[in-house]
Image (cartoon, rainbow, N blue to C red; front, side, top):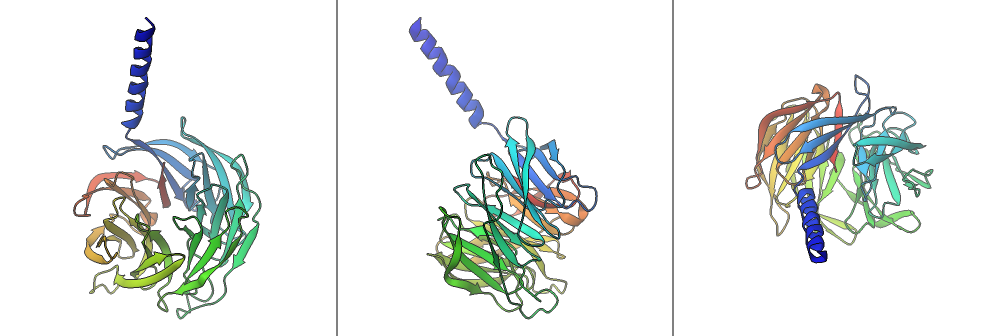
Length: 370
């Protein structure tokens, strides 16, 4: 009898593990601008087997929660409030119900926060302030809420584009795999600033070197690391390019710059987001105005990019996009057509195919999954 009970318990445990392991549902979080009809941060269930989605909840009460970041333990979500006198808010997330509960809000230490990141210890949140040209670091409390900023670093300088680069404009915060090197593209100064994070004290100090220069007028914006940790890439908003770097010990050594738009394109160059497929074989970048995703294959030995093609995003102003963890789907957030378009992705060729499925939400500007 005892042996039979043990066998039954083991069988039920195995069934539970198998069922959990076969779950195809992820949570999809959508950050938005609330200047039209959006109510805040939208939460959906997304099925990685079918590409279908189900609305779950909406977190309200925050203005322009444009960019989002999850804590390493997935219990907390952090959002900027992109406005003058900007702020950062913390939310707890209930994975059973799919609901967000606001914990608190703190000053971002500068105007127009547009990007936020959480270090791998989960103890520090770093926010980039676009209009203010600064970055701030905030401590995470035991309950996931945010303490007041303990450090704000003000960037100084300008570059050749007098309309867009009249002063510093911090555009993203990027934490290296070692959780120590912090790379901060500044569109206004044409520099990727480098910092060292002390995870015990939360202090940021200048890296060595203190920055990597971009081509004058390029406007570095978003940044990503290759899964192998050896390569890094930045997409440059103003000149429509991607630059690849060898990354080692806090240093970036450029090896290639490639256009994100066709040679015969005469319209506005206005890049936004950049991501690499989970297998590290393809890189994608979004072109607003050209309304496309550019697709490159990645040489696994040297990081070199080779053009594969362009995919029409079936909307306007692809501010942000994401590749799901399985690599089967690409979701594109089209800010000015109020839709998130779902594409199927060929893992062998990197090319995308419209599925005919899209999520209707006002002014989507950030997509992340759990």
